[in-house]
Amino acid sequence: MALPTVILPGYMAGAGEYQELERSLNQQGIPTATVPIRWQDWVPTLGGRSVSPILRQLAATVQQVLQQSGAAQVNLIGHSAGGWLARIYLGEKPYAIHAVDGPDSVWAARSQVATLVTLGTPHISQERWTRRNIDFVNQTYPGAFYPDVRYVCLAGKAVYGDRWKSWLAYNSYKLTCGQGECWGDGITPITAAHLEGAENLVLEGASHSPRRSRRWYGSPGLLEQWIDCLA
Image 1 (spheres, rainbow, N blue to C red):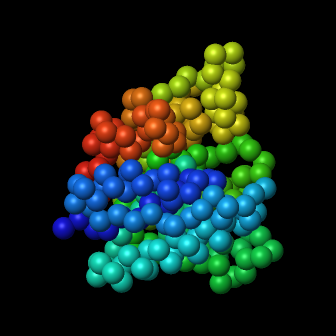
Image 2 (cartoon, rainbow, N blue to C red):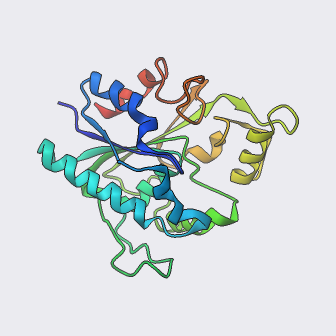
């Protein structure tokens, strides 16, 4: 039987946006739950502030899933910012880079996680508001840090950044990796979505977010390309 899976939403996203992905995984025999975050729950993290409020909700959901399933481990799916937040959650070093977080701000969940799948996660950033958090992650847990955790990093190849034809993608890519003219999912460039030492995949046509009008990482035809890593 497949391990239970927990989905951590992306920045400023609520759990409702992932209902279709959750339903699809459950239908494939993978018991799945989404961290019950509302978009309002992200407000205290704005401006590069502490992400501990989100991590506490993640930890509570994982514990609930473990208790209900009787499993010893879960698989984690982190969409967008949820991917690098999950890397903090795995670690045993205190996340104490903000005044509100003390030395006890540590989750040390690596033993409870078998596989971490990141969907369009910007694992690097040039943006000054996010640098403090992401630099902590990459300096403390560089790459696929824990050998006993399977890291699978998915990047989408849907939009080429062009200053005139795709302004949003161009600026988002440039803010993330320093180069606007490259391929990505419309928000995260391919180079930023991959980690050294991880299983790095590129999904043709995968857009960043779960919008009904677009194909994204969890859409039919794309989900099938990575669902086996949760088996």
